[in-house]
Structure formats: structure tokens, C-alpha cells
Image (cartoon, rainbow, N blue to C red; front, side):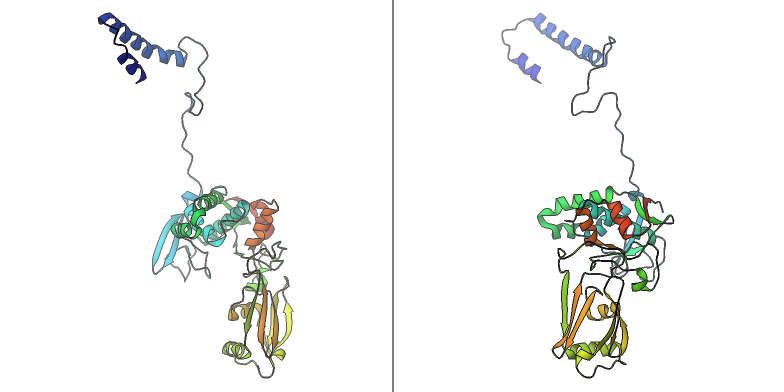
Length: 348
């Protein structure tokens, strides 16, 4: 285009020969330029233009990710089942299960744990969701957050957080926590009171890779220490509805006896009105954030002082973030919380 403009700006050129000469020069240039670039005379090839593809290299389309080749059927409730590639499903789980502000290595650990848990559910029938592999009920499977809702929750940080979680999933593509070559039950929870607990203490089954370990989180965790207070009558009504054989007469200070701690310092069991009750049962009955609690009881009421949040088995999410801040990798985090596992690719 520039050359045409220059020709138009030369009104003093007259006659046929100058125009023909110019046209001939253009034709020669168009014919000879390829020879110059491709070394028709045997000279050294020209270097590639910066920022462009080399002339001797063919662009290669990246191979599909391992996750994209695995389909997950997700029950959204009300007989609605959505089929998603594993990577898209995991994005929704990680966005729902762990704060996007967490360290990248913690998010990667969460992605591997969620992928492992999902792999262990594929092809297994469940009464809660017979037509799907997993559901969005956290009491059954894993939490789930639609991308549009996630973006609304994150506001101005949506773009960065979206990419951050996508990177955590992509950077761990296809990796799972394996024990004996098979995906483990990679359970996780929010925060521990200094130590996780053995699976047998919560669910009654001994699992070799779900043993108690120290966990480094503390008071930096939001709502790490909480209290729940009930009046004597509120406690009496709720407890007797579940355990009618209990004797809750007299002053509340005499209701609680023989507290037995678990391996993490929480409550394994306690006698309430003469009835032995598991700490996990009290947690469920009164909506406590964890079974790591102490009790104060008197005429003014019953107060539970609670530390941490969740069932306490497997990977602590806030513990994972604390370890990431200390420089631990996602593999180190996972191998710490899941005893004896290997982190390796797994194809269902």
C-alpha cells in the first residue's frame, strides 16, 4: 500500500516507459524475494522474525489433558444429572471446597485430593445418587460451585481466582493419591486442633493411610475457636430426645463425667447423665464445628469450647495452606496427611 501511494505522489513522471519500468521492478521483486529468504543460492537461511514461528517448524496442537478424557456424572438434585469432563468438574469442586486466596500448592493438593476422591467413586453405585457418580451434597460427596456463582462471589477478583484454580487443576493433570496402586478415600476437612485423627476413631474402620499426624494451622484460621452455649433446659430437651435413658436431674455441673480424649486431644467419648456418648455424636447433636471441645456446665447453662472445624480425618485444608506457606509442595503436603501413599498418574 505504501508503494502505491508513492507512485500517486509523482505527477512529474510522464510517458509509458517509466510506468512499465516500475511494473517490471515490482514483478522482479516479487519473484526474487522468496529465493532470497529460502536460500536458493545456497547461502545461510534467514533467521525467523522475532515473535513469529520459525519457517521450518510446523505448529503442533497440544495433546488433550488426561482429565479431559474422563467423564463424571454429577447429580445436581431433583433428578438432574450433568456430565462433565473431570477437569471442569474439579474446577467446580476446588472453587467450592477451598478459598481461592490459598497458596497455589495448597490448591494443587486440594485438586489432587478431589480428583482422587472422584476416581474412587466412578462406577460405584450409591443409593443417594444411583444415576450419577457423585453428587453436590457435602454430607455424601464433595461441594460444588457453578462458575457463574463463583464469579459473583469473588467480585473484582474473579478473573484472577478463576485462572488460579484452573492452573491448580491443570498443573496436577491426571495425578491421584494411590495406595497399593488404587485411588484412596481422600477425605479432607477444614482445620484441626493441632493434629488429625485416625479414621477408626471417627468411623470405626481402620484405614492404613488415614492415621493421625500433626497439623500446623492455628489462630490464623477464621473462627478457629468457637463457643456454643445452651440453657440447662435447652440442653436437657435436646439430649433427652436422643438419649431418653439419661438422668439429667440435679445441677448441670454433675451431668458430665468420665471424658475420654481421642488421639488428637479432642473428645472420644463422655458420660452424660450416665450415658456414654461419642464426641462425634455430641458434635452432630449440638452443631459443634468439631469434636475437639471442652465443656463447662453449671446452673447458668452448658458451654462447649470448640477448636477447629470438621471431622478431623485426612487432609486439613488450613493445615495444607500453612504447609504451603512454609514452602512445601503439593506432593509433600499430600504424603504428609495421607500416610504411605504415592502421587502418580491414574487412568480409570
